[in-house]
Image 1 (cartoon, helix red, strand yellow):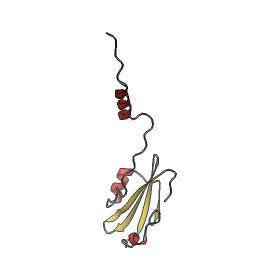
Image 2 (tube, rainbow, N blue to C red):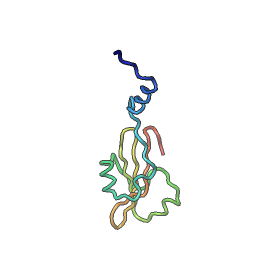
Image 3 (cartoon, one colour):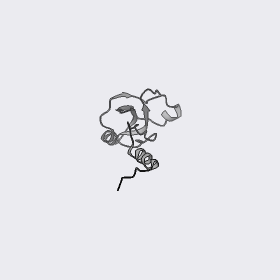
Image 4 (cartoon, rainbow, N blue to C red):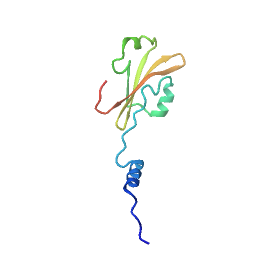
Length: 108
């Protein structure tokens, strides 16, 4: 008995589900890491590519006034872009206050 060719629709569905070609990194929701301790963020993202004092980008003044502790930002290089995660120094330690994904080639 000869083999039948599958209908083209089934082939297209199978290709879509298999994800042919290179995968585009999934952009996490804005502020994914808020309220997480630094140790937890590092365990999820690894070691930062670099870090600096203060907020990333140019946040509005009403946002920055919410924080009285020291601020630092860690930058985690990942395929297709970078995660920027800012932390405030609080009595229990560094806690994330905001985070954003920045695709390669983009700027704040």
